Length: 528
Ligand SMILES: Cc1cc2nc3c(=O)[nH]c(=O)nc-3n(C[C@H](O)[C@H](O)[C@H](O)COP(=O)(O)OP(=O)(O)OC[C@H]3O[C@@H](n4cnc5c(N)ncnc54)[C@H](O)[C@@H]3O)c2cc1C
Ligand SMILES: *[C@@H]1O[C@H](CO)[C@@H](O)[C@H](O)[C@H]1NC(C)=O
Ligand SMILES: *[C@@H]1O[C@H](CO)[C@@H](O)[C@H](O)[C@H]1NC(C)=O
Ligand SMILES: *[C@@H]1O[C@H](CO)[C@@H](O)[C@H](O)[C@H]1NC(C)=O
Ligand SMILES: *[C@@H]1O[C@H](CO)[C@@H](O)[C@H](O)[C@H]1NC(C)=O
Ligand SMILES: *[C@@H]1O[C@H](CO)[C@@H](O)[C@H](O)[C@H]1NC(C)=O
Ligand SMILES: *[C@@H]1O[C@H](CO)[C@@H](O)[C@H](O)[C@H]1NC(C)=O
Image 1 (tube, rainbow, N blue to C red):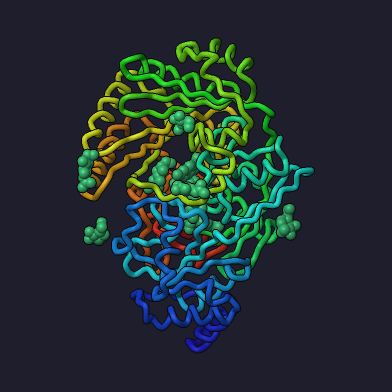
Image 2: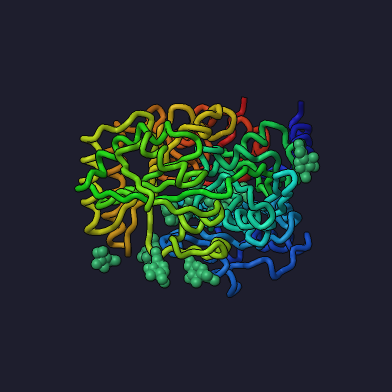
C-alpha cells in the first residue's frame, strides 16, 4: 500500500472513530485548545453559566464545593481543571466528551468528590490537561415501589438515595456505604459496601442496568454496552470506561425493626482478647448480623447492626459471642432508615440530616486498606496497639475493621470486578489523622511504617486493597507512547482486582483504545 493510501485510510479512520491523538501540552488560561473546548461546549448548547472557567470568580468555590479533605484545598500542590462543567442533562456530559476529544482535553467525572486521592478534580501530573464534569446537579432518584427497583443518577449521595427509598417504600432499603455524603457515581463504580454487606453483599451486586456516556460521547444502556462493559462498570473503579449517568438497582427488603449496639472495651479491660476472638466469630455469624470494629489507641468499639429485635439478638450474641458480654441495655431498636444517621452521625442526628451534602472535614487524613484471610495472633495485636499508641504525639488513628463472610463472600470472585470474596475474614482500613503540615510528615511516616509492619499478617500475592479506598502509594500509571501501560498498571491493579484486572484491561482496550478516560489509576488497555 502506498504511503498516500495509508495516510488517507488513517484520516478516514479518524473521522469515523473520532480518534484522539495525544500530544504533550502545558495547561494555561490562554491555551488555545482550552478556548476551543469551551467554545465547542457553548456551541453544543451548554449554557455559559454552567461552565466555570479558571478566570471566573465562581471557579474556586465550585472546585472546592465537594472537596472532603483539607489537604486537597491547597490548589498549588495539584494540577486543577481547565474548567468545570456543572452538567444538568445527559447531553451536557456527551458534549463535554465530544468537545474534549476534539480539543484534546480529557474529562474527569465528579459525583460526590469523596475520592481518597481527589482524582475526580485534581491531577498529579503537571502536564495533565483536563476538565471536570460535575454531576451534583444530576441526582434524581426514581423509586418503583411495586417492582422494588429504582433508577438513581450518579450525582445523588447515598443519603439522598436512602431517603428517597424510605419515602416511597419504607420496607425496602439498599446495601451500600455508611457515610451519607458519598456520591453514588464513584461509590458504585468501585463496589460499595456497608452495614448490609453480610446480608446482601455490595451495591454493585444489585445493579441490573445503567446508562453510560462512552469515549465517543454515545449514550449506552446495558444492551448497547454489552455484557463485558456492563460487568466492568460494576466495581472496576471510576474514571476508566466512561461516565455513568444513572444506575438501575434492585432494592432489598429491610425488617420493621433493626437493632444497633456499641460495646466499648479498653486494651486494659480485655479489648485485645475480644478482638482476637472476633476475627473467627464475626465472619461466621448469621447473615442478619454485622459486628464491625473501630480500633483506636485506647479503646475498641464493637459496633453492630442486627436485622431484627433485641429479644432475638441477645440469645444469639450470648450463644455465639459470649466474650463480648453484650447486655440488653446496649440495644437500640429503630427503623433501618434511622440507623443511617445514628451510626454515622451520632445518636442525636435525624433522618433529615442524611440529606446534608456538605462534607468538608477539619483534619487531614491518609487512608490505606488491607484484606485479612488468616486470623492475626494475639501477640501481634498487642504490638499493633503499642504502635497505635505511639502516634498520639502528632496525630490520631482509627482502624475500621469490617467482617466479611455470609453473602458478600458467597458471590463468585469473577461475578463482578470486586474480587475480595470467598476466604476473606475482614477488611481493615487504616485512617491516620493530623493537623497542619509539620505533623503530616511524621503522621505519614508512621502510617507507612504500620502498613509495612502489617505485611506478614495480611493477604499476599497480591496484597489486596479495596479500589474505593484509593491509595496512590500502591502505584500509578505510566504513560508509554500516549497510552497507560498495562505492565505498570498491574502493580496496583492486581491489588484492587486480582485476576479480574486482566479482563478489565481487555474491556478497556475494546471500549476506549485511545485511553481517553485516564487518570493516575485508571485501567490501562490490554490489546490482544
Ligand atoms: C467519609 C467517607 C466515607 C466512606 N465510606 C465508605 C463506605 O462506607 N463504604 C465504601 O464502600 N466506601 C466508602 N467510602 C469510599 C467511597 O466509596 C469512594 O471514595 C467513592 O469513590 C466516592 O464516590 P464519589 O462519587 O463521592 O467520589 P468522586 O470523587 O466523585 O469519584 C471517585 C472516582 O470515580 C470517578 N467517577 C465519579 N463519578 C463517576 C461516574 N458517574 N462515572 C464514572 N466514573 C465516575 C471519579 O472520576 C473518580 O475517579 C467513603 C469515603 C469517604 C470520604
Ligand atoms: C501548598 O502546596 C505548595 C506546593 O506543594 C507548598 O509549597 C505550600 O506550602 C502549600 N501551602 C499550604 C498552605 O500548605
Ligand atoms: C479516610 O476515611 C475517613 C473515614 O471514612 C474519611 O473521613 C476521610 O475523608 C478519608 N480520607 C481521605 C483522604 O479521603
Ligand atoms: C436498560 O435501560 C435502558 C435505558 O432505559 C433500556 O433502553 C434497556 O431496555 C434496559 N435494558 C435492560 C436489559 O433492562
Ligand atoms: C444529645 O443531646 C443531648 C441533649 O441535648 C445531649 O445531652 C447529649 O450530649 C447529645 N449526645 C450526643 C452524642 O451528642
Ligand atoms: C450540614 O453539615 C455541616 C457540617 O458537615 C454543618 O455545618 C451544617 O450546619 C449542616 N447543615 C444543616 C442544614 O444541617
Ligand atoms: C502538631 O500537633 C500538636 C499536638 O496535637 C499541636 O499542638 C501542634 O500545633 C501541631 N502542629 C501543627 C503545625 O499543626
